[in-house]
Image (cartoon, rainbow, N blue to C red; front, side, top):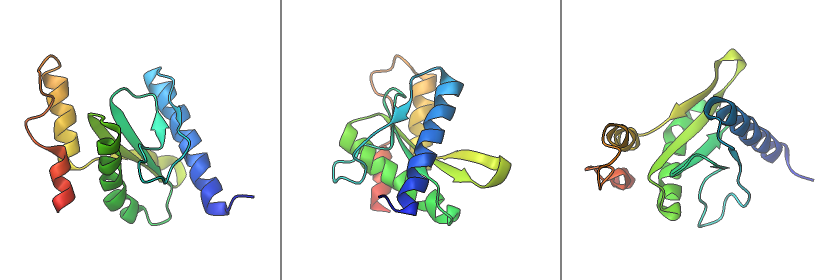
Length: 129
């Protein structure tokens, strides 16, 4: 039997996957094997992107920590982008949280989709903070 915290996290991942599938039309699903040293995120299906999901009671901590965890997992995966989905209580739902470097990589890619390099900044530089 799984602990309540794991069930809560699993349910949030399934909920976030359904939400992103509805919003994007892409087949987003939960990844299995989270927590490994070579973890590559919680959700699969958004191209070139690693996604972490958090349903923590301490949402401020999740906002601080999950984008950094997603960045490490982005490096493990070799993906171009990383973000965290943090679940808030009530009707607020999820918020996508990124570091400024993660957001800049996404903006640059959106503005220059055919550029040979997706970003002139190094998104992993935030790991040195």
